[in-house]
Image (cartoon, rainbow, N blue to C red; front, side):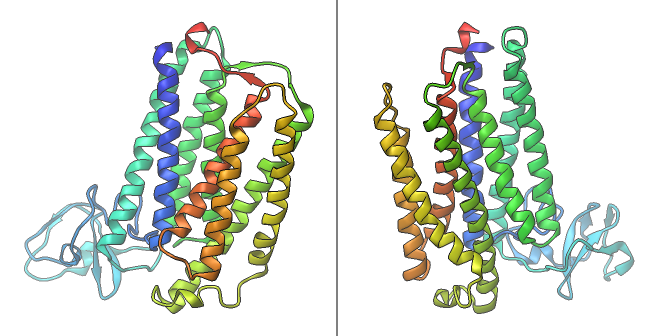
Amino acid sequence: MKSRFYFIAKATLLLVYAVILAGAVVRMTGSGMGCPDWPKCFGYLIPPTEASQLEWIPNQAYEKGNIIIVDESLRVAIDDFKSSSDYDDSQWGKYTKHDYAQFNPFHTWVEFINRLLGAIAGLATVIMFVFSLSFWKSKKRIPILSFLAVLGMGFQAWLGKTVVDSNLAPFKITIHMVMALVIVALLLWILKPYARATRNTVLRNTLLIAIGFTLLQIIMGTQVRQFVDVQVGLWGYNQPSRWLDNVPEVFYIHRSFSIAVVILHLFLLKLSFTQQEKTRHIYWILGCIVLEVITGILMYYWDFPFASQPIHLFVASVLFGIQMDWWLHETNTKKNYNDL
């Protein structure tokens, strides 16, 4: 089991990043409410593909929890039943979590794929925990961290439900994103089985500051993104030039703070040259920062060209992961899990 654990842990990390990317696509396409309920989608394990599937149908078998749209509102089947020739409102209850009652098959399936990837990532985390138990005698930290990752995925799933139930409340979206990064950090820590003394205190502390800067930028960026979502709802997808009208103060802080991020990482570049052991982390980090700056400029000056938003968000999460991996590298030596 030990020989397979490292592969499973890496696969789980990749799946978590796939979920983050899918979430970015959900936000880019405005598909967050493509499934108005959770964990099912319109009360089905496999979501509908046509609006007619959400209309009341006579002599149709319905299961408890199935959802239809009646008079622009969501109605939920109270119990299992077969409809008669006439609509009977007593068989249906009003969906009370929110009043969003729209169906767009593209949005529904984008959100469904995002949830499906999340479920697969959650299952991978559980499998990783099972395999981690083989390290209980030699390295208890590994199964403990694996268990925390399982709890984190469970909490993340619950957060996803609250985000949908709240009709995409901004604060809950931010927490949802931060929790994804916490899970990434846990998985990276799991992948570093041995600990040793810090090699370069200045570098390590600077990396901690850089991680904090990136996390702060992601939080502010999520708030800016929520403002853009509101603007999209106001002006529509055909007028991206209006999406940044009357932006909140957090937008200017987010944009200006990027200068400090660049300066800090140039200092990290200088520090990395002083190390006896060179690392590629800094070059990957600088590449991510360049992409962040480019996509930020494109969104502001060229009215959000296609895919610029999900790339901006996903690269920020990758940047966080590389920084965290480098910081762990400064206190850990990666060895073969078979040696534990």
